[in-house]
Image (cartoon, rainbow, N blue to C red; front, side):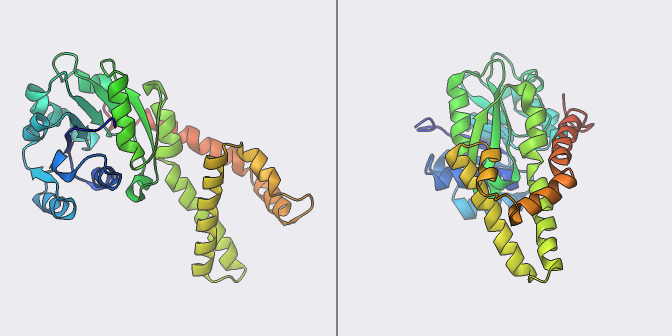
Length: 274
């Protein structure tokens, strides 16, 4: 087990940090006593301590001193001040895992003395229900052992893959922003059924389960979506009629444009630390 005997600290105990902690404990990768959390809100720390039985403190340096793995779960705007605070106690035998959007590993490394390993991760909101998609990228000092540990942490909250950091803006445009695309597609399909007379609650159940099941088939079979689409499409049938309407509206092209626009914006964000 890559996380056996590891102590994991979280600087920031927001929703995503909570999701990661929940996944770690659900998978029994570490015990609650091996998790340390600091947050600016005392009420938040009290909540996490009561819910999970983890250790909490108002001191960031204390978390870093006690942890082998430190998850930087703060907003990009405060990353610089946080790193200035903890830099004196950072050490090369631990790793810093950042989930702050747009903050490059080189920026974090510039605050830490010596060859301190840094890993950057782009998770998404389905981590909150244990079905997240996360991309993991190594900084210049992070070896395969640390990547293995990062992958184990985020696999506990869904699925995780390793990608070069140069591709993380594309990942942001795809899976980072992807939940919003899925919500919009669900909304349109539900409204289409309601417009024809199906009660909204029934439409929501039917299409959300359809999206869930469809995604599961793609993951479990490994087949190309185009092949799976053909398997459920009868020439001249109902599915073909629906697909023709989607192609007429250029849905495929619009989705491609959405990924490109979001990826481009990821590299332009004024609030991001480059």
